[in-house]
Image (cartoon, rainbow, N blue to C red; front, top):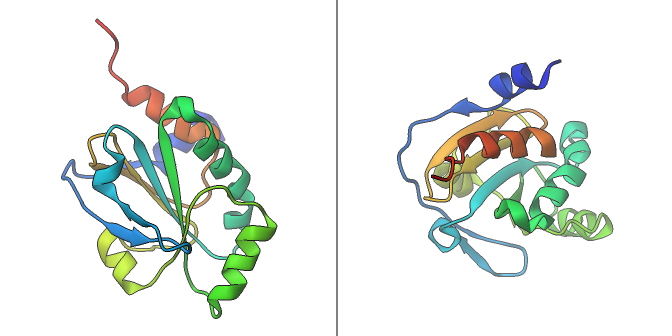
Length: 153
């Protein structure tokens, strides 16, 4: 599938309203959207049993570690039985981004989960600008962000 078509399908524009969330990761650190002002924030709902979720983890890790994007990834584990299994899974795979144990409150703050994986993208001003149901690639996210940057005058 051509990347432009993929981007059109993957990233659907949302209203430009500002949203706020406060999520606590598995290490007890709070993540507020407001603390990431000036950075892109990708909130990714995933599950340990979901093949597309597992396939996108390396790309999400690369996005999170690539500081030139000024992008933070927050991984929200959903549909799990035992939080310890989720955390062991994340440790075994050396997932570098924060892992949040999601619940209904998470969905209320970030947005609905229409399937797994589901991702929400916030721009550097804290506006939710896109979402995606299905697997994301590093390339698709980077191209989307590059297309949203205004040219230098």
